Image 1 (spheres, rainbow, N blue to C red):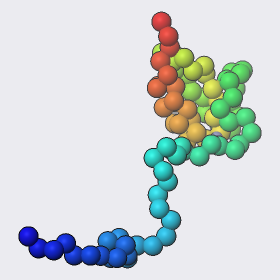
Image 2 (tube, rainbow, N blue to C red; image 1 turned 90 degrees about the vertical axis):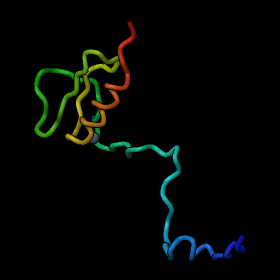
Image 3 (cartoon, rainbow, N blue to C red; image 1 turned 90 degrees about the horizontal axis):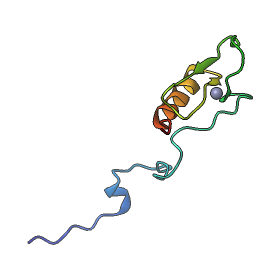
Amino acid sequence: MAARKKTTPKEWNKGKVGASRPAAGAPVVERCTVDGCGRLAEGAALAEGWHRTDVPASSEPPRDWCSAWCAAVGRALADLRPARR
Ligand SMILES: [Zn+2]
């Protein structure tokens, strides 16, 4: 059995430097800072560029979002929170 070759951390890491990736428990998405994003849906008309999510089978109520990205995240959360029966 050959002796195990000792390596420095840099050799093991193939020379990569810089910040490591976030810890596993870190939030997957940053919280949106736009005022009113994620608020409960009110009224029939949405402002330009805003999106509404409404998942009937979810415990999440209809909400308004500032962008398609935020709406996608909101829709995913609503999908993960089924309505209690
Ligand atoms: Zn947003």
